[in-house]
Length: 89
Image (cartoon, rainbow, N blue to C red; front, side, top):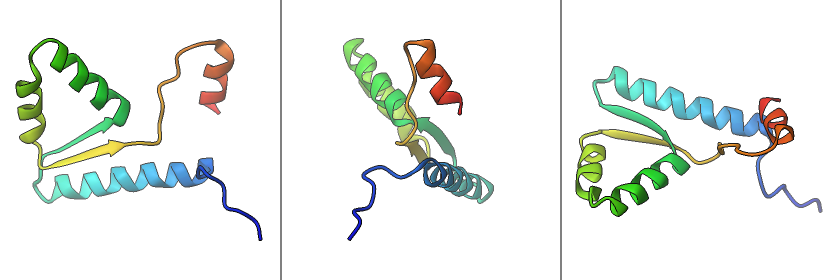
């Protein structure tokens, strides 16, 4: 029996991202306040806010949003040109 891959393939990740966007768009059209963010950006923002003693304001800003769409799959590519080329495919 073949074991399923640990991570979904590129097509599946793309479909998940499109679904996230579609759900957020529908929520916005229904009158909800929606915010999209990458999980890495959200974590970085919260850590920086905690370091600067601004965590309460940052959490309050996210609290004013009705729907928070967090993309867990994408990653920020920093590094060599080879990594950037792989990211563009």
